[in-house]
Image (cartoon, rainbow over all chains, first blue to last red; front, side, top):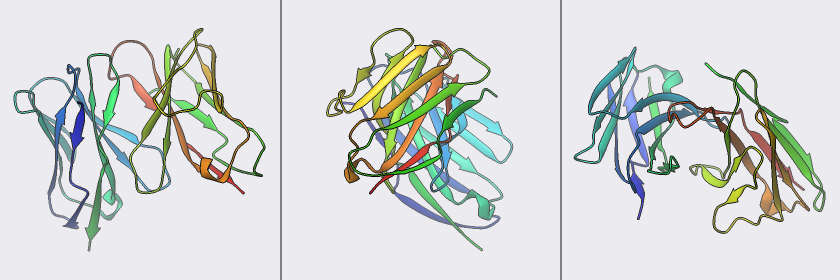
Length: 109
Length: 116
């Protein structure tokens, strides 16, 4: 079956660094997405990885290892506004997104 | 980036009435649109996939007669919740894809439906 696993909740301190992990099992693989979602709002796109390695975009970086079925989202210099849910989603061979349940990130001052 | 406009953002209706939600791609042609619903503190649940000019493909457990999807043009898809009941209250979100390129997937802003 297809499955995306990520932690339910994480807590970090303002100004620190946090890594949110995601493991995936999909029928075929056409890439992995990370989305940010604030409560009551639609998700917003953060990153897309289809090749192994780290991609950096400002304070956010995303890493993919296809051989391990593993990805992580790295957030640096955390700000209070980063408090949100972070959704990991894998794209299968039919280009359908398989969503994780999301990781709620709580930032404390 | 590309913009997907979804409205209304919030709707409150009486039980038994029908509600239509629109999803428009403003600066690109959306060959495929997806409709999701999301309950509080839960992830997105795909309801259906619609391709322009053809019937929508519904996920298992989603009633096609209750959730009518129309994708009549390359820029517009609509979801109609027919004979809404309180259990249909949810956050509904559309997303659109410009083509087969996987990274071009954009979300609407969502519609919070409350059925009294």
